[in-house]
Length: 393
Image (cartoon, rainbow, N blue to C red; front, top):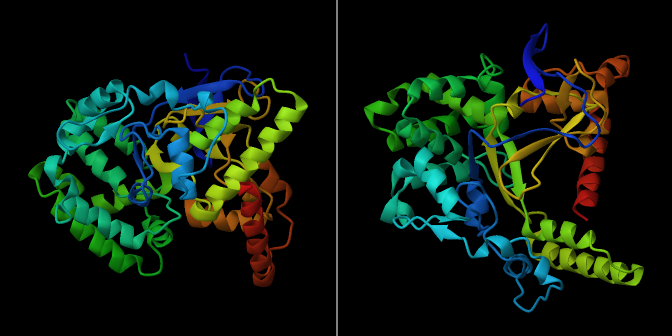
């Protein structure tokens, strides 16, 4: 049973309202995505993940050695490898060899989209229209990634395979609320200064990949822009990491102070080694569309947080602060560094990425603050870069 409801609030649109009190760290809900997919460049760089749920498909040792580009790296306490419980269950599609973490994920993928999406022997064919579309996207959207055209490809397969297309379309349309008449700003942010020319190239590749009459409603220019708008405004970033999960597990072990200090040094050394080669790109990363989670509004003083504790694409919403019955449940669309920036800087980021002006309590309290000049904005950008480096350590 869910202890919240979705309501229309004047001036805000849809909002999630608590129907009971929540304590700090209490789980508000867990949700599987409507659709998810690993980022295109993430796959290209060899990050092995389940094609359905994004659970990592590497052991801890394989992961660390690949990220450090050093087969001699050793890791202690491998009995706490989070992949160990799943390793024997790994499987793959017999036709296209796409990999899954378990038979359950393979069966679920086949049930929802993979009977249509399976490319068989054409998976490695660079001339296949789906691969051409993906490569077109990759040339426009280099890392760090914020989306992937393959999320839309998977949506098309879901639609074709769906036994209730009306219900599917209703669910898809539930993501559309924020994008009417705002597409240009979204595309500019996703594709850069030359977004009009790039959008034409992407649209042409999309139409070539989905020529069947069954996809006609999606291959009009307006429908394609809507799909891109949904991707740009509603997709939730997902990151899973064998190394991070292992660090969390071993850090909670009942060790002596001396052993804890020794373990901390080993962990720091491991992160230094993988950081030297892989930089900040340490995780399996992708994005997903979540029907419930997409209904949650932003606040610069959020009372809830989206987490991925199972190292897959299941989002768990937890309370960051006490929430009273009747309160709106809000998350932050910004990271911790961005939340510490000025009201002017926060509004600039939110307008560019999510096309709205925040009116949360923090922003209202800072309404009389002066707008930052361009020079100060550049100083803020440097501060944020420093903060991002601190977060990686």
